[in-house]
Amino acid sequence: MKSTVLLYEDKPKYDAWLKYLFMGVPALTFVVGLVVINIDLTGALVLFCVTVFYILLFWSILPRSYQIYEDRFRIQLGRPFSFNVPLASIQGAEKASGYYAMAYWGVRFATSAKNVVEIKCRRRMNVIISPSNVDEFLEHLSQAQRSLADGN
Image 1 (cartoon, rainbow, N blue to C red):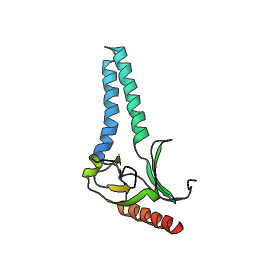
Image 2 (cartoon, rainbow, N blue to C red):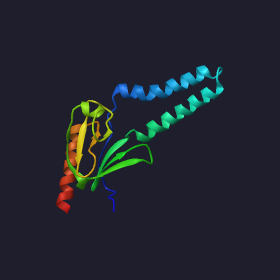
Image 3 (spheres, rainbow, N blue to C red):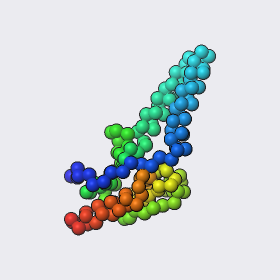
Image 4 (cartoon, one colour):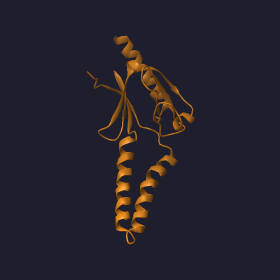
């Protein structure tokens, strides 16, 4: 049974350029739709639908928070989506290069090239994230792993 005791929660760090990208892409398709509405109504409707699709896609896949429970680490995405990693499957976590935020073999939920943490897992793909406070996050994750190991 999954634990409901939340030990620590942190918000992701978003770089400014990423914010501009995630706001700019839907804004661009919306503005182009407005420009072509008098020329091609069908094309404008398609662009408006693409705008809505982008907004829903970004809402669904961008992390909202990183949560550490007694038995798992959870990345809360747009509701109702989340990504769980059991603490027992985590081999280690450490600060990583900003390069890993953009190019990495594993699951990337990194939203910043400055605050990058690599979570190495057994029998799972490794995970890259960008917590606001890297050192505090790593300390709480390590403490939760020690507590889990002591409890078993």
